[in-house]
Length: 464
Image (tube, rainbow, N blue to C red):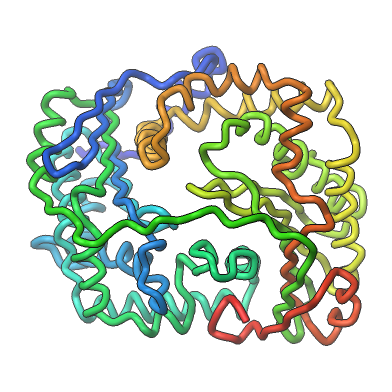
C-alpha cells in the first residue's frame, strides 16, 4: 500500500509545532557541489520522514523575456508540465499523481522554478521527471495553444472579476515604466498573443541551460548517492547560449503621479500606493522587517488598525517590501467602497505620515520582535521549505548566515536601526498611486493626489 504524503505532512506538523523544538532555528548542514557544466547542487539530508524534496531554479526568468513577448518564461514554465521526455501531458500528470507526489513549475523575475516532493523510495522517478521537465519539454503544439489561450483568458477573467490579484501588476508597470521590472512577468493580453510555439522554442534553446541551474535536494537520502544521481541526470545539460540580462536599480520617484484604471460599474475602489524600496540583500533587512510588521504586516498593524478595525473602511489593508535582486516596491494596498475612496486613501496616507513622524516605542519594538521571531521557525521546517531556502540563498548569492543569524539580528536591532529602517517606506509626498474603480465617480475627487493618467480596465496592457 502506497503511503500518503498528506499523512506524512500531518506527522511532520505534529513534531515541528512544538515550540521547544523550533527555538533557535539554524540551517542544518548541507553539501554544495558544482557540476562540470556549471550547475550548482545543494544536498541536505533530513531523515525524520521518508520524503525527498527538490527545488530547481534556472537563472533568467521573465527578465529574459523578448521585448513584446512578455510572459514567455511564464508560458514556458506551464509547458514544462505539459509533456516531457517520453511522457505526453496526460501521462506526465498521471505519473506524478500515481506516485502520490507533487511537482509544480513557475516563473518569476529572476528564475524559472521547479518544485517537487516524493516519497524517498521514488527518488529516481522524481529526478527523472524533473530532468525531463527542465531538459526535455515536449512543447507540443496543441498543448501550447491551450496554455496560451488559458493564460489570456485568465487575465481577462481577473479584470472582469475581483481585480485584487492584478493591481500589483498595474503598480509595477506604472512605477517601473521603462525599467525591466515594469514588464509584466505573467505577460499581458497583447504580449501573450505575440508568443508563438517557434519563439517559445527559440527562448528555451537560447536562455535555458545547465550553467544556469541551481538544484537543491532535501530529505531522506545519502548525500553521496544523491549527488551521483543528480550529476548523472543534469551534468551533461548544455549551456545557455545567450547572456543573462543585467538589471540596474531604479531611482526613487519624487513627487506624485496617479494612474486611474477605469472599471465602470465597480462598487469598490482598489488602491496601491508605492515607491522604490529595498532589495533582497539589504544589510538592514532585519530592522526593515520589524518596521514592515508594525506598519502593515500583521492584523494588528497600523494600517489594518486604522482602515479596518477602527474605521471599517476596508476588510483589510497591508504593506509590503517586495525584495528583488534590485529594489522592488515598498507599497500599501487596500480597497474600499467607491464613495469612501478619498477617505480611505487619506487615512492610508495619514498613517504613512505617522510612521515617519512618530517614534516607534520600545513596547512596539518588543512586540514586533516577538511576532517576527514567532513566525520565523515555521518557515523552515519541512523539506520543501528548506530546499526553497537553499535555492533562494544561491540565487541571491547569500551565505547560510542569512538564516543562522537572522533571529539574533532581529533581537539585536536597535532603536536607531529601526528608526532608520522606516525610510524603506516613502514619504507621503513621493508616491506613485494606482486606483482601479469607477472613473465616473472618483475621477474628480482624486485629482488632489497628483497628475492623473487614465486607462481602461479592458485595455489589453497593464500600462497606458
